[in-house]
Image (cartoon, rainbow, N blue to C red; front, side, top):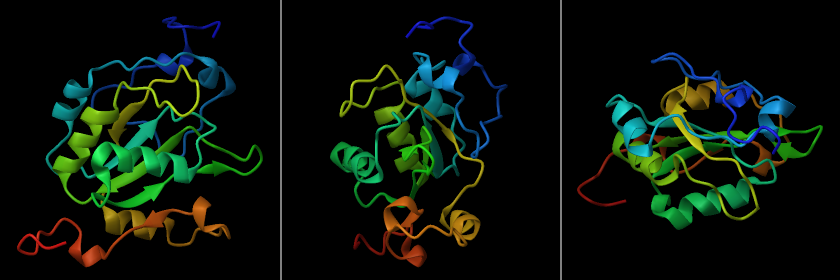
Length: 178
């Protein structure tokens, strides 16, 4: 990329502490072109999460990734059964994802484990210079995400927000049974 790790790259903008990127923000073509480098280590980001954060926004997802491929990355990394909501917004004009996704974990500890696993990492299915960044999402929790995305009018189920499991059981141990 001609912008490399340049400090002038618009994708390197730093948000003030406590502020997160709006969920509907779309990367500009210039941002998509930049090599994206996280501002903080995975451990620093994980430690910055409040004790009640369960929903994360994963930024800098390579645009070629489709839902199945990104879910596969999560599962291979050991997060199968640990999240109950997943949404990879698709740009229907370009037929590619918008460069970010959301996942709600059934426990805050799973969200911080996810940060430690994916923040600052590159996904490997496609050649990319994009470095993943994770932040708390504006909308937190399964119920709030279900309410927010309840009226999605998308016919293809792979393009809609996905909900897994029984919302009443989310995060409960039920004496070790799942």
